[in-house]
Image 1 (cartoon, rainbow, N blue to C red):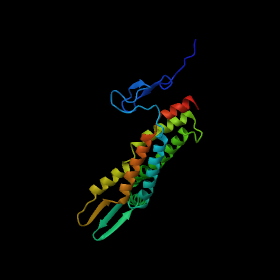
Image 2 (cartoon, rainbow, N blue to C red):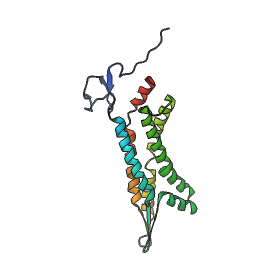
Image 3 (cartoon, helix red, strand yellow):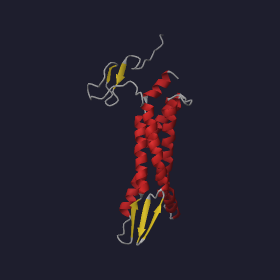
Image 4 (tube, one colour):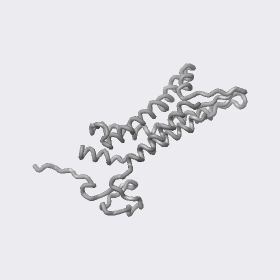
Length: 205
């Protein structure tokens, strides 16, 4: 029985449109269906990944240092950071809500930062990376990304529910905007990563 030889589209001189997935001959400049520019591999793909990653990391610092929620009771205003607010909620018996905030605000962002950085380093052949783990980490990034805005959603819900007119109000603090920017930048970083680089490593480790 002859051995089955698997060849990639790139090895066959073909290129797939990253917008609509239609396959074209390698010499085509633009997709005839959606008009997107056709590139087999982005020459500065990893650079874009790192730029967005660094912007996200920079925005994540004030997101944890500045108040996420500001509580105004009569003439007194107090603010709580993400971790400080979660700690207060846990002390008042809302352990479940505190856990959701910590997972969404600390565990998920740090996991995504680490996963994207590892993928970029692996694609650039900067760190040893078993093929099985490259695919698992890539799918992990795709999975955790959908939960990135949970913390901002919790803040919005609290701000809309806890309003007692002149007695007390809860409004989002400056950390909410910083956290939202951090989420957006990490999403752009993950979107900038060309998954085909993983396939190249599978073919030529």
